[in-house]
Amino acid sequence: MSSTRGLLTRTLLVGVALVPLTALTIYLTYGPETFSRWPWLQFSVAMALLTCLWTYSLWFAHVVDGDKDSLNPFVFAFLIIPLDVLILYPGTRLGIYSDSRIEMFLLLTILVHGGGFYFLHKGIQRHLRDEILRYLRS
Image 1 (spheres, rainbow, N blue to C red):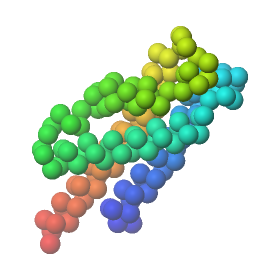
Image 2: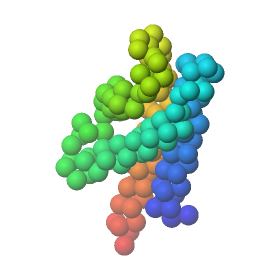
Image 3: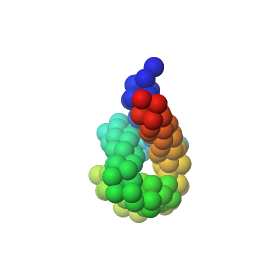
C-alpha cells in the first residue's frame, strides 16, 4: 500500500471512529433521556470532520510556514476542541440553560478528539517521512 493510500485510509478510519465515540461521550455524560433529544449524529459528524480538517490545516501551516507552534497538541486540545464544542453545543434547543456536566463533557471530548488528532498527526508524519525518503532515493 502506498504512503498516500495509507494516509487516506487512516484518515477515513479515524473520522469514522470519532462519530460513534463522540456519540458515546454524549450518552455517558448526559444519559439516555437527554441523548434521545440531542442531535447527536449531526454533532458527532461535525466534530469528526472538524478534527480531521484542523489536523490537516495545522500540518499545512507547519509545512508551508514552518510555524512550530501550529502543531502544539495542547493548543488543539485545550483551545480548538472546546471552541468547536461550544459553537456546536445545542444546549438551549434541548432546554439546558445551566449545564453542570459541560466540564465533564468537554474533558471527555478532549480525550476522544485529542486521540483522533494524535492518530492523524502520526499518520501525516509517517506519510511525509516516506515521501521525503522516496524523493531522496530517486
